[in-house]
Every structure is written in C-alpha cells, then in structure tokens.
Length: 71
Image 1: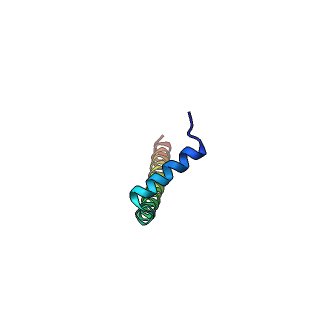
Image 2 (image 1 turned 60 degrees about the vertical axis):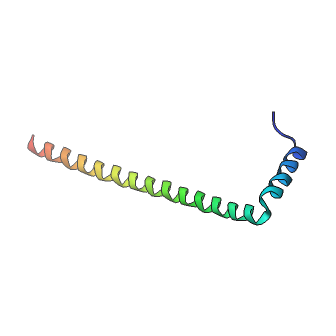
Image 3 (image 1 turned 120 degrees about the vertical axis):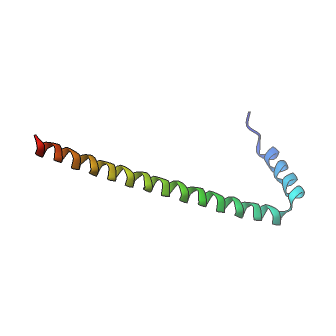
C-alpha cells in the first residue's frame, strides 16, 4: 500500500525538523557525489571489459590464422 501525499508531506516535515535543512542539503550533495562516483566506476569497468574482449578476440583471430597457415 502506497503512502498518500499528505502522509509523505508529514514525514518530510518531521525529517526536516529532526535533521535541519542545512544537514539535509549536505546529505543530498554527498549522495549526489557518491552516485556520480558509482556511475563513473561502472563506466570505466565497462570500458575495461570491452577492451579485454577486443584484445582476446584479436589474439584468437591471430591464432586461427597461424593454424590455417600451418595446415
């Protein structure tokens, strides 16, 4: 069961009262930085994996050509 809009607003007001607007703003900035770092890390992992696949494909192609020449 999803909470309604008035319930979400009440929860938001309570959170702001407990933590304060400045602390929540800092928390939002920290969260944004963490998400950006995570995205950058996964992108670099994808690039690394793609490079490894290309290198492996090139080595296999070279080995296949060598075997064709031997036959």
